[in-house]
Picture 1 (cartoon, rainbow, N blue to C red):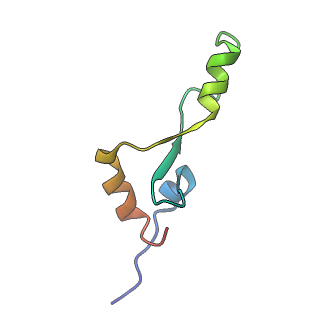
Picture 2: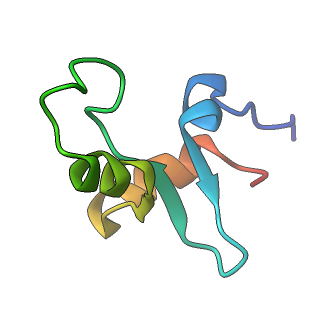
Length: 65
């Protein structure tokens, strides 16, 4: 059976934690930051867990992570 290919676009956007959860970065952190409060910007910097409904599709494209 041939090797499965990893989707590089998904591999750049998500990472898998040591417990196996898929983590993502929050959106709205690239531009127009001046109007956002520092508290809001700080919370956007943190990572969060991918929803369970999306995690299955992401894990299919990340076979070796």
